[in-house]
Length: 107
Length: 118
Image (spheres, rainbow over the protein chains, first blue to last red):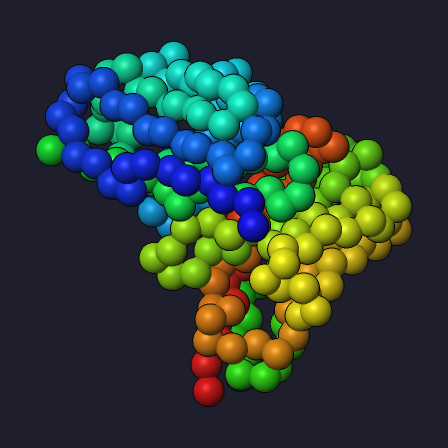
């Protein structure tokens, strides 16, 4: 069964801190990886596609990198409005597996 | 503008079936697929499957095989997702999302809460 392993499952950081979330695929997926942000009670929002392409309107403090099996989402300077849960998802082929999520809080 | 509008909340008894609809507008329906995702209370996102609106091809999550059916009606630009033999584990918010071949799910519906309770 295909696995997307996301870490950490939660983190607490101060405003202005650099935050890094990782996602590891159990098999290579080239760059077919998206990152989503979900705030409580809201619909997931796409932040990044093709591992590193920032979606229109997403602040530039968000960035993505990686290819193959290892991927990273970075928030360069954490802001209060970034409190949310972040998910990675592979989309090269079925199953379009999600990572388990990373809950980001402000310290 | 692209919109996916889902049907309203449902309450079902264990063993029953539920069908959630997802009406698309603002794009050529048959040029994309629809993927379905669910989220149990306090849990993460779970991919359920995908259907091509072009030819009806489907891919279902292994866990749901035999219990879920996805269909589309191109005359009304609506996708449907049926889950049968419901249990409390199926209590979740169900989302539809538009997906182009080789691309990520981009536009999402507002979500439909399905509650399974006796």
